[in-house]
Image 1 (cartoon, rainbow, N blue to C red):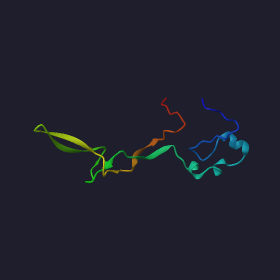
Image 2 (cartoon, rainbow, N blue to C red):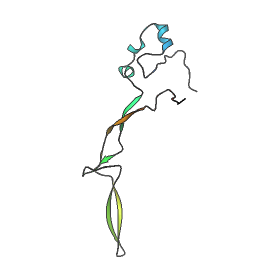
Image 3 (spheres, rainbow, N blue to C red):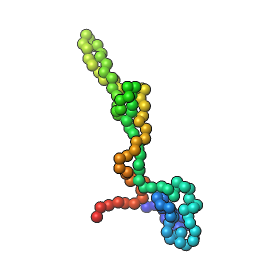
Image 4 (tube, helix red, strand yellow):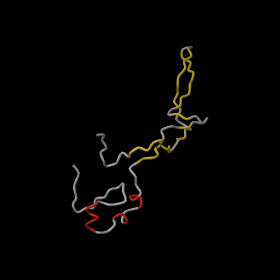
Length: 111
């Protein structure tokens, strides 16, 4: 699975140092050649995009419905109509406890 390129440089995306063996062979600091985002990356996720929305009244929920009375054959029947307009997304939410990023390349198991 996956290719092992002997001529390509591999790096560890979540730490400041590059591949240990290659760095020792070359004798230089690979972290200086990488973009700043790779040097400061962390395997933890501290925020996430919320799936909640605010309506016009300021209420917060996943979905909003409006009750509509429909008259059919002389009978009144109540139906719920889903509201999809004038909703504002809650945006980014800070997590109570940090989670591990889904792309973290290490298998974590309990022994």
